[in-house]
Length: 399
Ligand SMILES: *Cc1c(COP(=O)(O)O)cnc(C)c1O
Image (cartoon, helix red, strand yellow):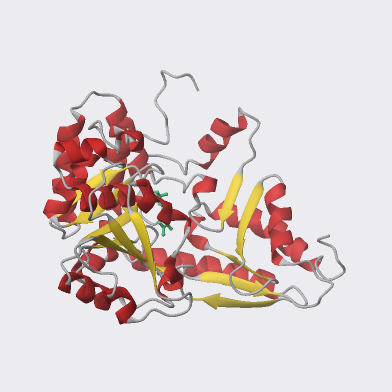
């Protein structure tokens, strides 16, 4: 396709799979079938046609970026039942910008000095049981990280003891894995607000359900952050900051297009309009029909892998972090059998590269996640490779 021709997929037709395969095949890259998750390493997800169309429209014109962010923020706030909204380039950027806002405020000199702004009030509380690779965005904004609680328990007094005039914010990570040993968000909000400290919720992957766009702020969180490129199925380099107007506006001062910490977190006009289209789509989507489609895919996987001797197969009702979609799990026994990590690597090393999930329920358990399998043909490709690979596990066939 020449550069001057319109992209047929962006115009609204087709599944996009063939076009995408051609776009990457040019560079000798294998097709990827993603049955694992909306992993950044796999490019997030395949974007729905209306998102691609919105991005293509935005690409054709100039716009005043500050005005674009203000206007789309107002629209997204209304759509998501929040006071205010700001499109950023991802949830991680949203976390850095939110923390910067809570530490430095909107004073131009303090914004300019961030992340080296040395106010007394720059401590940010994280729960030890929630530490994860994304929390470096907190330190990136110039915070002094204060870790509270134990690895396997958090007591209210442990949080309360660290709240005071030097605390800029509490950051809380939403999701079943993160919340297992944490206090419930409502309780953290009560403790923090008693001390006059705002709570930032990183809810990057907490969708579906779409109602989560207002759930966490409804529970009292001052800000909630979402990835655009995960459950929303928007552009990979997009994200949402939602919540209190004063804090969102302060975050705006630190964000692109201003010459501030957010300048290295630039998001494009294409990403902004792509994310708007993704949110609009998520709000009008028939999620029951989506659920039925996922359940049917899970049924197919369970029937196919469950028929392999020695394989136990079952359905889990939720995603890795508690999201509202089902997954097809399967497990096998025997010390001589290959572990799931090896099966996954073998499938990922093939052509097409097939990615399945593993690592959650023991060494010989894996799963297929239908959320990232759009095209029904992808499931055929996956099962054609997965079933024989499972059948060969026993005799060390995967070795
Ligand atoms: C994925 C993820 C992020 C990062 O989101 P991006 O939109 O890729 O920046 C942050 N926090 C958590 C908990 C995540 O799962």
